[in-house]
Amino acid sequence: MESELEYHERLYSGFAQQHFARPAIRAFRAHLASHIRRTTGAGPRHRVLSLGCGIGDTELLLAPYVRELVGLDLSPTAIRQAREDAEAAGVRNTRFLEGSPDSIAPPDEPFDLIVAIFFLHHLPDVRLRPVPSMARKLLGKGGKFYALDPSRYRLSGAIGSLLLPSLMRKYQSPDERPLDAKWVVSLFRESGFECTASFYDFISTPLSGLFPGWRAGYEAARRVDNLLIRVPLLRLLGSNFELLATTND
Image (cartoon, rainbow, N blue to C red):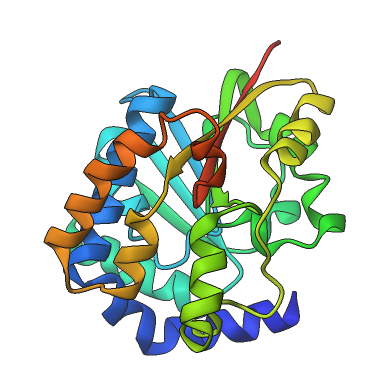
């Protein structure tokens, strides 16, 4: 995890702020925030915890629609930027904290939703396995856990590694790896969650990263993705899978 922290400290010391402000990235984040609200039912009465929040770009899009949002990240640089951006945007119902998931004590008032956007795949197995049980301690009755991570079987990853290997390496941290959706689902079910996984995209998110200034390209690719992720068998080669787990007690 030390190498991951070092990588992200460098990432958040300039590049991330510029990259995440580009039109295609902003369009992707806006789509994702809206999609999370629809998928999880997050609303004005809900307390939300975001694991690995980074500079809080997605979180600041979610916050106006919920009661409170707490963002957590190991990177001091990212948390500092998230706080500054929240202040500049006038978003008052957020708290951005430096720390790791295992450092969180059960709150007096449980969370209604935990989100982990491109976070779980940065954790080694030994730290990923306890996440579901940790989440159960933080969530209230009927609470939900939403995660979005790259799939182990993504076609875009294979093509990118073949055609653009140096660019692929640029966007990969030292310890990250794509995940097997079925395995992650099994971890949550073993901890007593009702859990399902589905595919979020095929080409739109990778395209936004490769061509961050091309908003129209992202939006066109997103429309194509809405069709591709519905095709049986083909969707199993999707880029990123989303997991939705619900406490059943």
